[in-house]
Structure formats: structure tokens, C-alpha cells
Image (cartoon, rainbow, N blue to C red):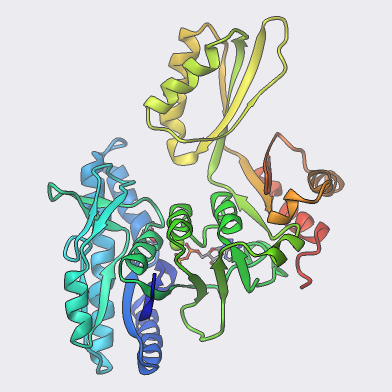
Length: 408
Ligand code: ADP
Ligand code: ASP
Ligand code: MG
């Protein structure tokens, strides 16, 4: 795919949290424009707007219609695009803002987690030709039958990647409140170090493990279409982190980063009959309720019974408990217990494929710090442990030190 002198830049909610930040973002866009780039800007909602909108809905009902949730949540981005356009006008630049629907971001109808099917770039191209900066509302699209949809939390990242692909942009910049991807969340591990490059695979695992900085789905799409991503500061012009295809040298780094996810809860079904087909029955019901499960652990059987634990997103806890209690009863299992006082701590690195003993070093670091491990799961390039939420920061720092990640 030949690329053009066009940048897609995404500014996250924290970068447009108030009008003074919006003005700073406008100044950064001017600096880029002066370098001769065409610019398409994707913006998220101001600060905590999306959370606040969700809270408003919750004050009315605990089971709002997903179509109406999308109608509500999409308003956040409509505010920020207009304000950013005004800030650019004020400093003498030509800019025009659009909702997802206006620029033809067509999605399927799975409200609150819609998938982009197609983007019609005609209107954007037309405005770019006129020399304008085009501002697009992130996180939203429209179905073939004209219903507004949203793309899942953090979905502005996906809007940006999809636009970068559709417009053949030279790069997709994710501008945020940190200077790039760090070896751990710098808010939790103060001596975390910025990494200059990272593979799509590692970034995907880090993001899925809770490293917030990018939405996992956006990385999957970027990887699929080889869209180059540069995560960098919204306010400084320093180089950030380039996300790219894996190269040989990356394998030398065994652990690339540490991630903490405090948004999950653990559910345990006690005394599940240890017979073929029972786990299938339980998890089929949970899947039918549209609940995503993360880790699953089944204990060793004790005289015909076993315990099964799994984790889900906190926001799905009530719904999951209801479904799990029903299905536990129907298969003759015992009590259902839950614990939302947990955190998932993960280490990620493609070098793990070729190095052994990494998990045991992580467990030893936790043991030295008296952190109990409740669940463990591993993939080829990741080890995750569920621990007590209160110990999460201490544990993250201990593991970060164990692998000497603050040193280059
Ligand atoms: P935005 O508002 O730009 O979308 P987010 O708040 O979603 O930004 O993501 C940026 C935040 O991600 C940072 O402020 C940082 O605290 C957090 N974060 C978590 N893990 C990492 C990491 N490994 N590297 C950088 N930032 C991280
Ligand atoms: N405003 C949306 C959210 O908070 C989308 C985004 O920030 O990317 O999830
Ligand atoms: Mg974000």
C-alpha cells in the first residue's frame, strides 16, 4: 500500500479534558500542518464525559437499551470535535468537524461494541483537497439502517486506525497524556521507562492485560493491515513509541512490560459435578448472555466434584452472577462466590518464547513481597497472576524491579 503525506492523529479524552487543553492541542496541530502534512484528527470525548454519560443512564435504569446507550454516549465526541474546530478557527486555520455518520463510518448493528464494515472517504477527501483540517468524532459510526453505534470503550483508537488504513495515511499518531508506551503504567511504577518500539503482538497483549493506552481491537486491526502507529504526547513534540511488525532484535528483550488490570472480578462455582459436558453447559449459558470471560481455572477434582473459577469485567459482574447462579443450580453445582477485590498482574514479552524460567522469577518476586497468587494463566508471550487488589501497585513495582525494566 503506497502511503501519502497525510497523518491521522487521535487525541484521547485526557488530552481534551478542558478548553485550555483543547487550545494546546490546536497549537500542536498547527505545528504539524506547517510541516506540510494533510491532517485528519480523531477526537475522544472531553475527560470523563463518557463515564459521566454512562452514570446518568445508570441513574435511570440498570439495564438501558444498548441502542439508546449509543445515542447517549456518542454525544460526548460531538462536543469535542466542534470545540476543537473552533479552537483551530480561532488561530486562523481552516478546519471542519464531522460525526462518524457524516463521514460514512458504516458499522454492523452490535450496539456498544460495533465493528466497522466500511468507510466512505469521499467527504474527507473533498475537504482535504480544499486544504482543511478534517476533524472526525472518534468511537462512533452508523449502521446501514441509520442507527448510531459506538465501537467499545477506547474506540477512538479504532476510528483512527480504520481511517489511517482507508486514507492510506503515512502514519497514525495516538496522542495522549504520556510520552509513549512505558515498561509499566508510569502512574503505578514511577521508574517505568519509555520504550522506543514495540511489536503489535506485545502491544496487543499489554493492552489486553490492562495497559489502557490503546484499545486492543484497534491494535488487531492495525496489525492486520500493517498500519504504522506512533504513540506520543499530545503536548510535546518528542518521539514516542512506534508499534511495528516484529523484528529479530525484539526477541532479545524477554519482558517488555508489566500491566495491571483492576477492572475484573472473580467468580467461583463450588462443587461442580466432575462429568463431561458440564463446563460446556456453564460457559455456553454465559456466552449466550454476551459476557466475555477472561481467565478460567478448574481445580483438581475431589471425589467427583470440582471448583471452577473465572474472571469477567467488573461491569458485567451482576449480570454474570445472575446467569451463573441459574446455570449452577441447573447442573447440580454448589454455591457461587464472587470477589471483586482482585487485580490481574501480567508480564509480556516476545522473548519469553525462547527463554525459560520467566514465570518462576515472577512468582518468586511476588512471594518475597508476601503477595498471594490466586490464579495463574499463561500464553506464549504473557504470564498473568490474579492477586489481591490492595497489593497491585506493590506487586507491579516488585516484578518491574525483578526484570530490571527501568534500565535500558
Ligand atoms: P487517552 O485519554 O489518550 O485515550 P488513556 O487514559 O486511555 O488515554 O491512556 C493513557 C494512560 O494509560 C496513561 O495516562 C497511563 O497512565 C496509562 N497506561 C497504562 N499502562 C501504560 C503503559 N504501559 N504505558 C503508557 N501508559 C500506560
Ligand atoms: N470516549 C470513549 C471512551 O471513553 C472513546 C475513547 O475515549 O476512545 O471510551
Ligand atoms: Mg483511551
